[in-house]
Image (cartoon, rainbow, N blue to C red):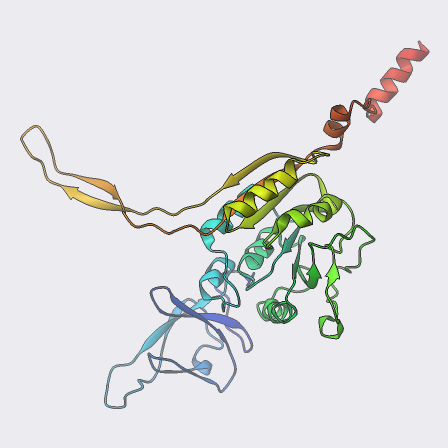
Length: 335
């Protein structure tokens, strides 16, 4: 998943098979195995040991047809995985992913919490953004989806130090001590009920993403683990959910500022050739907006955790001077 371009395919790798336009499927390579698809039959041995990003020829399903079918084999990547991921739930697509990554202000080395793993589409993009030294703490309320997603992360080369997958209920308040050990996967199969809260240390994460039915119920847990100045994003399909979340973010003691909601819509423009109507005009190409565009996916609500000093100012408390200022004040008093 995070390997450099031009990687040689190896036994056990996950590659992407391009059958046609917007028809991409993942494939786990195994020596001696054969890929059977609509186009024909393709030996895995013809892929293993060779560079990715090229066409592979196979055998036609109809023996009477002399044509040799071919499919394009691509290296697995976070952005392409969004198009090929097996859907266990409704997934987040690249338009919303781009808006989320930009507004959460993520970069290598950051720590981010994702509540609502689902099919793992966003998780792969989060991992690529914070790699190699960051960490994605992702959790899901559904036990089986959590196990399937964890197995998928490991097959794609995302280890437990980069993506920590947990079975948790983040909408139940738990501001106790951290119970997640970095780099160690909890034994989800042996658990009878999900853990509550986010499970990480207080004020230890840089950003939080919530894709849960009631994000307002998790705000107290968010305030416990999110750093001052950290970013929060909620993903809600309905406006009623968005309104209730915004009300919870604006409620006392006013921990969040810069609250805003975004709806990312994709609109297509088609080039149209226009001929000159008279001698004073000339031929040109203009762009006309398509009447049909991608519809609504969800409302993205962003908010920033208020800084501690700003909270003290609002409450009317005197600010404690920083080290250099404090020393200067003491010297002035002594003089």
